[in-house]
Length: 266
Ligand code: 0X9
Ligand code: ZN
Image 1 (cartoon, helix red, strand yellow):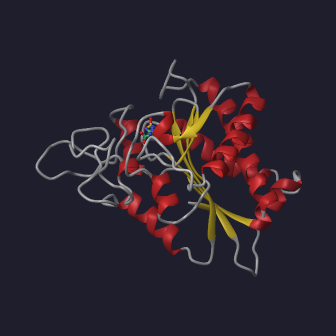
Image 2 (cartoon, protein in one colour):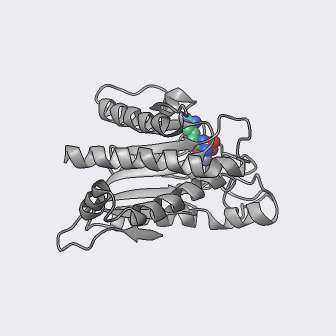
């Protein structure tokens, strides 16, 4: 994990960005690395970046599922899950994005270890997910203001809830929807790509045990998003090389826009 920010005597708020929980979604790591490099490169160049690093510490975790990632290089390019052994079967791995402990095991998660959406034997069974959750819970000198879980593909900017299709009015729907709208605007302004936004369970189908639901429901981080990067299905997970840099550029523009909006709201 990389931590980026200007040192401060006071405790700072933080942003969290992770990618590569799903092994085959390689573009997500490119975006996380691009973000880390770009934000450091723009120090002293873009005053917004200076302010964003003065006010927030940025935690960037480029490969959340390292075993799965290696496996996509060595053996199976389209592997999705972790590489943990399962009891009583030769099927390997758990879906890291069904393994979080909020509404774990509900709709859209599978109890079949052979499924690509296997939720695991218990919530936070996966060391990778357990470590992330422990870190976010225990980093008590900071308040997380933004959580981004980068995936591919489908060009979506999704907010909670994921475990149900409908959000209720007392949720922070307005704030999340407005932020998602700003993010996709920044994306379309960069290279003209259209991203759709909305609550995860509604835009797609309900899925339980996802990161953003736990981060919002348990940690109370309102700005908690799953971003599905390019493309719209033409190449899917096998995104061609010429699309890597533009995807990074538009995602960076969106993340910066979100950061700037949080700064202004402060
Ligand atoms: O299924 C996932 O974990 C994510 N999609 S992916 O293709 N990257 O695996 C997010 C799913 C988003 N939401 C719902 N299905 N509700
Ligand atoms: Zn994914």
